[in-house]
Length: 110
Image (tube, rainbow, N blue to C red; front, side, top):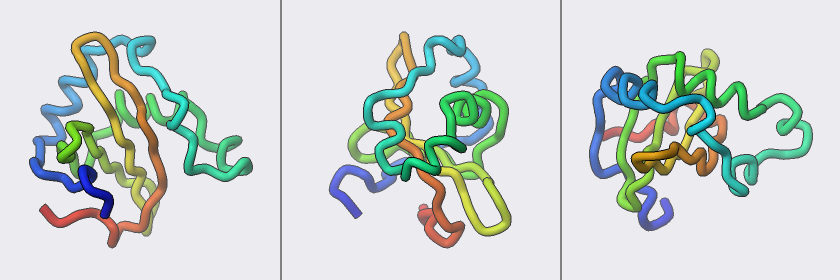
């Protein structure tokens, strides 16, 4: 694991969802790095709107704050996979740093 990416504090998923819903949809933005890990074919499937839909409408299965201060948010995605979204948040905006689909066995034990 990359230094700084380890989750050091677990958060209540429902409280996280309540908090993120305080932001307007135009305050949740992608960064140059958001789609970095995706192949060209995957970029046609995973759009900004899908990520925002998960953030604003689905209850995460795990939310944690990483050592670097970013939020790691995990959602059920399929029978064997989870959607992992890394966020940076301040009082004005939520920045979608990156996201990727991981196997369920890769969810960290906290």
